[in-house]
Image: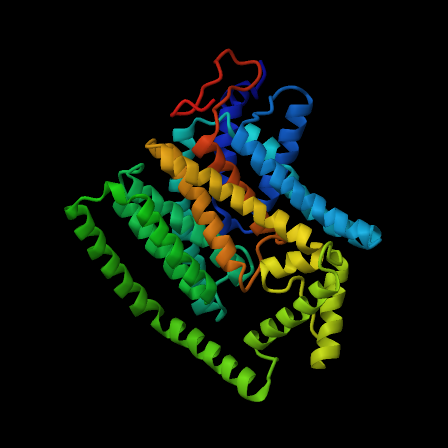
Length: 428
């Protein structure tokens, strides 16, 4: 008798997908663990497709996303080729593999039933929000540092935690999950954790994303529901103000202090001053090579050289603290347009579903896409859009799951007898 037979019967492809999805939505807590899981899953998906044990699930929204993502990767390689920098940039191409897994991981994820995936996204986000708060309190009060969660970086932590908050909010407002009090409590916990991170730009991103989620679900509100929502929002704001007021004021003071130092003394050594210096260096570098850019490694060398020549400072960063500017310097207009097209196509796919579909699962998927675009783009104004292992993996997770839920089709693994099922709304 095979002692592993019961385990093999339990670990069906659908069950493995469930465990895999749970891990992928815990990014605020497990940090780079999500990057390891997603990329390992991508390799496994590629192997399954190569062995013809999984079929590629190609539908129009996924194909459009794949073209845009692959165009961005090609633009990075093209920039290095034009500059003769392939040897120098070769190691920097490795993170692009995460993006190349998009169609393969999409095909594997789409064997999961949509109601199951939505429930995983919402309930795992609840765990992620409460876990984020626990880590934030530990790091802030015991270690005396800005909350970094499991990411090891306050900005990255705030970005992925804000997505978990939005999943809780979307789950509660859409009515998909009936335990709205649990979701509201988790969203509040996640928001407080983000306050402890001190990441000001994500506070703005969350405000915009939260308003958009409310607007998407506005049709579900009666007068009584709206009154209750306003009451809960008011209580939550008071709670956040009471807990986070010292942190918020401290971060605001830092911002005004940095601004005063920059404008009156020309001090570029502060956090704000360094960002402004990076933007000035980046814009100069873009004007030198506007079409194809300088390549990844050269852009970092230009940054160090710019700090020395323009500001007499020895500083170095991996990016220009603006996602679009980083793409412009690395891959020029070609790369920036390709990167922008990823978010434009994602938004277009989501908007089509929100206009035409009343199915709550499809609308939840579209909401997932929209909040991801908002948080990444606003966060990228002063930080990074792509180029960090956690952010890249989480972006792929949310774009894959959102696209599949919004407009994808559920398929059965090869070897199963169940037919291919079209999503609600009839789009096969």
